[in-house]
Image: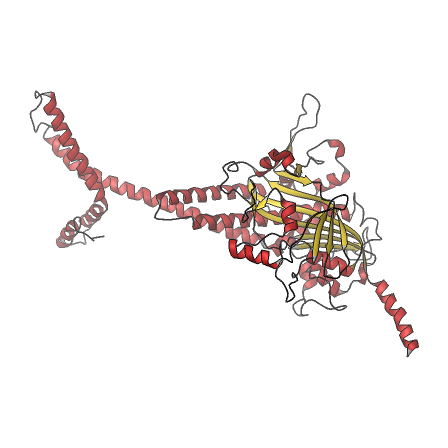
Length: 564
């Protein structure tokens, strides 16, 4: 019996050592948020990026002068490969347009881009404990950026993390649990569900800058009960400073609101020692980002539900034992874009020309564009709802504000359509396929049509209402003119000499003028008041089907109360 156990132990150890290892992990988190104008007059009409720049030393964020906006000496081949991957109109969106001529001093041309990127350098690492009792994992913070977009009140937080020599289970837990803006709930013991047991931002010396408070259930419950809005976890609130959540008591000139799911969209790059050792269950868990399995080879969902997994979520153009980067597989569900490849391939791990460079440049940008478009459409939808909530049809000023808000939304949506909305971003097969796969899962085309139809309906209603008001005004003016015509013709026929007062004193003539003016004004105003009923009487009078009695009844209704 002991010999059997002794033989089984080495075999178990061998299987454990043969389990796939993640030699290098890159995880990119994107958090789309809506910028709120609020009651701050200073914010009204000014780009948020301009206010960020003016904060100066009061903010940890600094505007990025990158390879495109800075000196051309920092422009490398990987940046060129990124640039030429996109179609011209996408290039203008991402990189702006440089002035053709250099300045007199010979400096590089100034780049005017609709994108403004701010970066903070004080956070160096992220230390996490996926589950209570697990060993801490420390990941390098490659960079933390904020992306601002011209003429659109959307900001996207971008956090890129890197780690080495992780087990597959650790990598799966990282992808599943990292990037939760707040806990989804708590279990019976009070532990936060689906998020990290512990998260800490560290500086370059390893000092803790901020830690998550996801385990503080009462704080989150109180916030939702008070504000009817979720509370951002403390470590993510720290990253966003000086931007603050809309539903908080903290002061801040720039405020944001969550517009998507609390789980941040995510990209991941995994370099494994042998990707072919991954089972179908491993790929399903990576592609759908469901976390590590409790048992080996266990699927997260039913087999029938996953029958078309490969067709729906996998891009297997390079999933073969050949090519520059053999056994490379892409998985995309809209919320996540994952690339898995062989760590032994030099091209797969190359930061200048290989898959890692593509992941950090072309693939990142196509993922950013897709989620920016979705966030913008959700923002337009939110603005329509807010305009309707503020509308009080009994208040003239409220109606006018509502019309201005809808007109402004319609104008902004038109500018968004012509500046930022495009179906094709590249003609390169890989970028094009991944972009379509991501957009299809996000449903941006259907969302765009829905928002466009809603804004169009609102604008059509306002146009119809304006035409109705104009028609009513024309009717009233026509009635007044028609009845005024009687007096005009009568006085004109009599030669305006009913009273021979040409030689009368000035005072008497002024008195006559005042009396006649007052009577004429009163008659005009009274005619306008009765213009709708008078218009109905005119319609009845001109209707050949109406009897003389009916026409007379219509005339009497002009002065009858409740005749409407």
